[in-house]
Amino acid sequence: MKKHLPYLLTISILLLFQSCSSPKYIYDKSSYERQKALQSSRGGNIFAEVMVGLGSAFVGAMLECEVDYVPSEQQFKKINLINPTNDTIYVNMLTDLVWDDKNYCDFMDIRIPPKLNCKVMVPMHAAYNLYFSNTPQSDDDEVIEIYTTDVKRFSLYPGMTLEANTPSEEK
Image 1 (cartoon, helix red, strand yellow):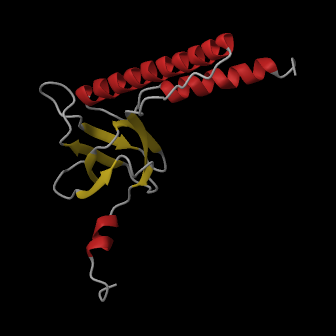
Image 2 (cartoon, rainbow, N blue to C red; image 1 turned 30 degrees about the vertical axis):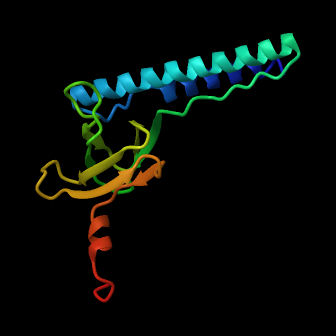
């Protein structure tokens, strides 16, 4: 077991850094900063929850009694946007949820390279309109509405909303 410990530690640290890294596919500066703020806020919440859980278990063990600990509701969630196509997908995520006094919690100018994915941290219980296309121009964007509580991963490809809007006899 001691022989494998350095490898396990190295892999664990790499996975931790990978999971905490900011999305590299967000090119809008304010959206990128908002994403970093969401991730740091979520990281702080997770750390606090773990410490309170361990503290309640410790107090319960020391006093030989049962300490009820109810974790708070998760406030943020990662959504995995997948690009299965051979083209770059350009995505804008718009919501009516306010992030601070003057800005919405929108994420603009997300560019997902071919056959890759982008994880975006979003608030729970929010509705987002995803505008996406395989061209940078906005005149041919498709739009689809998603709810962050219902979606964990979402595959984006051109024409997906056209198929959903086509009457059944035309298919």
